[in-house]
Image 1 (cartoon, helix red, strand yellow):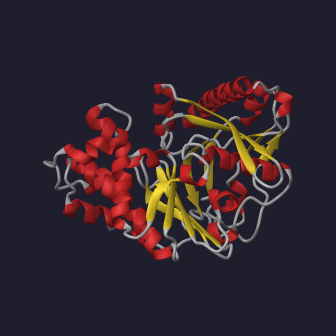
Image 2 (cartoon, rainbow, N blue to C red; image 1 turned 135 degrees about the vertical axis):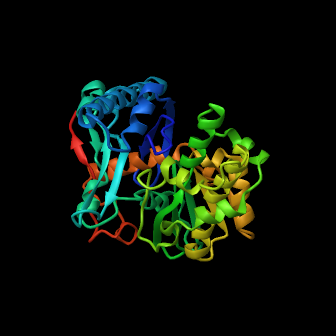
Length: 361
């Protein structure tokens, strides 16, 4: 899995026994600076972008292959021991339902190259079938969250904070709702790198030094997307540096740390508002993704949700950094067994669909 935070690749080796799953290994690899810059640039139109996108996809597949090799070596496994690789690809455009009534979602990937490099079958292109069926193509993880974190008789909310934040509401009777809340780490990471040279605000320490700017926060919270009802999904197509720069007009003299504190509060408020509006009676918000390691962000979410326990998914048996990679292993398994991977009530698709294209070993 490589998500909208653009911080690298996570890989999970997942064993399924018919009744549950076990993460038997986990590995990560950072993006080279040049590849990260190119993937970020490809989020917007540019010169020779088809050529550049194809080469970036090859580079991404090579890193995926390296992570697979790490997992095989650590687990002392042969390629024949692995049924399939679920490779999500890198989302560079996400515009479901727009332009022609169908729209599109685009994940850069080279699954054929990954199959050649690893000798293992690859399942890729998970989102486009849901979009073709009239859905958002995202989020896809709520079905996995239900399988792993759902608790009969109790409402549970699961919040994934990557570049974008998405919420899964797992109802006590098995019902599931999910949608993208709004920005996760993307804007905070951009601002931190621009002003400190660091790719992210470790632990939220820099944000903790600043003061929230109420006027700017309100301007950010006025974004119409944040007030739309689900099903809905978003990405860097909306929450990007230009979006932020436009809303910073009139705040040119603000201290950078204060802007960072405000961006952290934006993410916290957007996530908390989603839980308040749609989280039923859940007293637990389990958090995964990189945002779970941002202590200041976690504290701000908790402050906005009195009476709700806000904690990493580690407490539910799956470490927060492993959840999304494990989710795409689960989705790959669904595809291999010709089982649906989407939830129409989450994405808005016309019905259940088998997701993904299979590239045989």
